[in-house]
Image 1: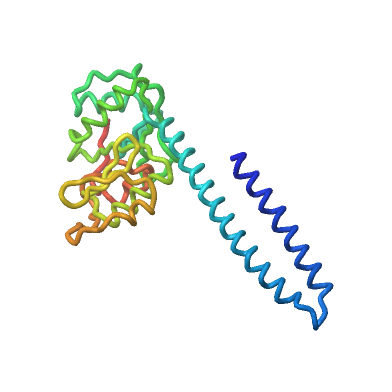
Image 2: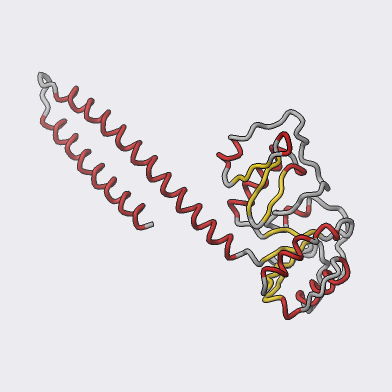
Length: 246
């Protein structure tokens, strides 16, 4: 960030100095002088320099954004979101999650293996909020993630807690390549392409580089592969099943 701020300061200083010089030359110009043509040539060169500098700044900002996103995603590596668990007054979300995992995933999960858990967002009468669960050990998180298919048909879905940029890339990928051809793993977004190959994508630019196969299925509500949806509101349109009660 310090490098970007320095670049911006230097660009601003250069811009102000050059504009002041242009104005001074124009003020001193006479109808017979070649100043106008000279200023036009200088301005053209300065414009090219400014555009190049701006592009460089944009690249630095993008790089910083990617680094911050990676740091944020690493801080979420022990977190999963559980959608579709009916809410109850004065509930203990950790206990409810443990009951759910014991019944369907047949795990030995206990509440002391959960660092914290809570509902996401404000309560709404017409919407079941997902539960954010942070595990104490990454192995428990991974075991839960690996066993999520056992919840098929229950109305409960487990997803990774993606950052906003990754969630946007994931949703764009699903729209372009189909629900069943996109998934997430450890916070990374993957797209299945032709011949069974897969591509890891981190930006819209990465998506544009992938050729869309003619047979790519259109996104379909209710299809599997929700893994990676970072916000509870995305689930509402995907499942008409009643929320599981645990």
